Length: 171
Length: 116
Image (cartoon, rainbow over the protein chains, first blue to last red):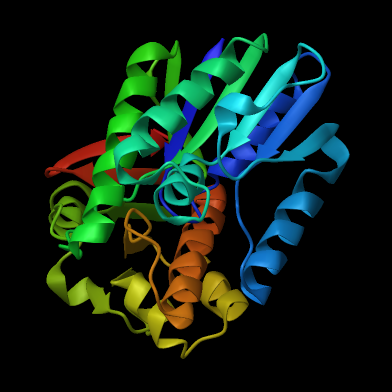
């Protein structure tokens, strides 16, 4: 089963995704995508680490080129999150850049999917604040939207988190 | 307590009037007073005028709490805005957990996402 978990900031999507993955077969890999730059970032990573500490995940960090990631064994993978992965591919050094970001992220998820029996992917809803952003940001929004749409079409299940409540979008 | 959420102008107050029977006089705009309904709760969070735990406690005493969904945008560049957005999201998760009923307005249509 492949599940896409989507929601805005602080809506409880990580907790939900972790709970979902934590009852799936071991080994359970948590693929972290956040490239830390600041103290705030490190605190956020620490918070997430503590949150999943007792849930039996093996953490693997991967900031770009998800396609090249090799899982040691077949099991469950939780990828968090596509918002960061897409930003890394677009903006970070070593990323695929504007022309390659969409393919890098989607082919990365497909490669991951081929290596596990259960997959949970967390993504972000960044589409509903009604703000018109500068071109660079707008490109990011467009690419992330395309990634989300592709994966939602492909996966068996898509769940939106609202105030901690899971709402089925596709099941 | 009933928690009513949704985007800007999605019909949240209209819902509270039409389906829950409250009037404009019952509704406080981003202030905590004796009125049974409070709306624009995100503005209370953003102002930082009430500590998070006190705010949660006061809101749980209300009949109806109305809050805009504010998390579905690009991560704000300003640290303060990021923290405020995070706080508003966390508050709504905590409110939803305790609420008897959670209603999400979308295009004016109420979706009951918790309770009956």
